[in-house]
Amino acid sequence: MTFGEPPSVLSGEGRHVLVVEDDGELRPLLLSLLRRSSFRATGARNGVEMREVLGAAATVDLVLLDVMLPGRSGFELCREIRAQGDIPVILLTALGEASDRVIGLEIGADDYVVKPPDPRELVARIRAVLRRRERGGLVGAVAHDQAMFGGWTLDTRRRELTAPEGRRIELTSGEYDLLLAFVERPQRVLSRDQLIDLARGRAFGGLGRSVDAQVSRLRAKLGSAQDEAAGVIKTLRGVGYMLAYNVEWR
Image 1 (cartoon, rainbow, N blue to C red):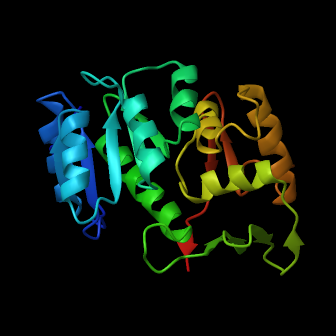
Image 2 (cartoon, one colour; image 1 turned 120 degrees about the horizontal axis):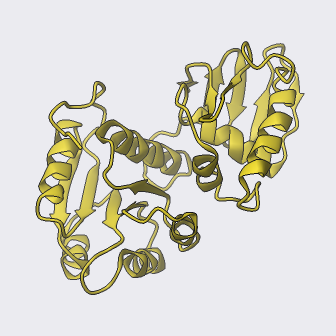
């Protein structure tokens, strides 16, 4: 893992991220990365220090929380944070089992990142979680409710999809969650496991093959079921799926 090069887009906008990580080498690297990315960042080594920061800081916008901590685990601390408020939580975990990721999401985590984290992916995930919370009115900024891509419009407040010619497209709850996962990560390849986690597993029952079926149904509604190469959602064989267009929020 290399943190030497800062991300190409610096748009942390002064958000305060609390990094709860007991690794004395990794924690300073994460703090440095976040500060170079225009975030305010504070470190804590365990749950005791985490609570001290949360109690003393005027604002904490997001907690980056290691699962394997001395004393109380990250899972326990995530439950504690959820019981007391709505601060977004991203779990930082070395655990590779899908069941561990699902547990984290079920107890209220907003996302997870597997160690060792890719610096650009970590910053992108933090920004994506903050954007979702902003649109939900939980992080007090002006909301961006409409995502524009390839002539399509996804209204995240009304949960409505509009075709380029103005026709309203009906989406099931699972299809909406899946499309939102793509829209928030445009032109980025997402594996089946990532899509299951990002859509909270609601549409797939935790089964990878169900992702393929759901993507096919969504692709049909986007008018690209017969032409994967030119469609809105592209397939990368053996890797995953990708939204082919840039996204503009307004």
